[in-house]
Image (cartoon, rainbow, N blue to C red; front, side, top):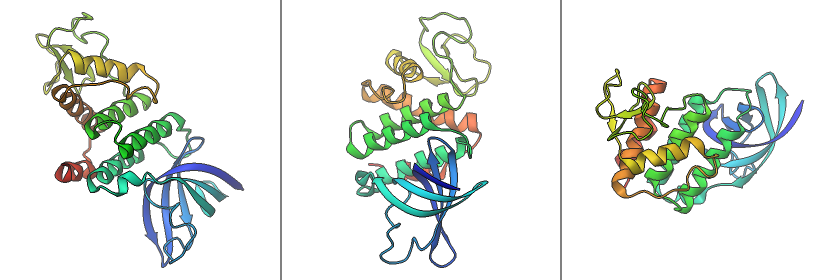
Length: 247
């Protein structure tokens, strides 16, 4: 069967002499593994469309998870990311995280929309990298079934959380005086807690729309990456690399 679809290239790997194997995230079918013939040959019309972090239109042929791209054209290459190694590293982390949590052949429109908004904001410098990272991490996990509890203290239930903390293991905010029972809770403040609540409730496009001072932003960023690591029980080399090269 033939399929025309738009997708974000999450990963590329050399295959045989001149082909590529891509992992592509689409709205309708989630992750797809796609073979692109001749993609690494000089002058290939598929070269741009098959780059990691490129949003492209593909015409595919195949079935049962075996897809070959007959045609492809880039829609958005997020060129701002490719001009800065730090920005590219963070975008690569976003792709690795998407590859981890999104399923094959399962609709992923909200996650794809969030990713495109995040990459656009990052490439255009609309928000700081730490801001974009925190929103992407927290909102993506909400979309994939890991939504944290932040409306009230997860222990005592009071909505006006006193000296807020966040337990990445339990996935909840709580008062400093309340024991989350997991250990390793991270300090927050009123502004970062309000931002977390906004991210949870807002649609993907609006999730980025808030402002934070540097200290609150740093706290939210640490909450996001620690929550990801604890809930998924793994680390990310691309995140470690971004930390080593960021300004």
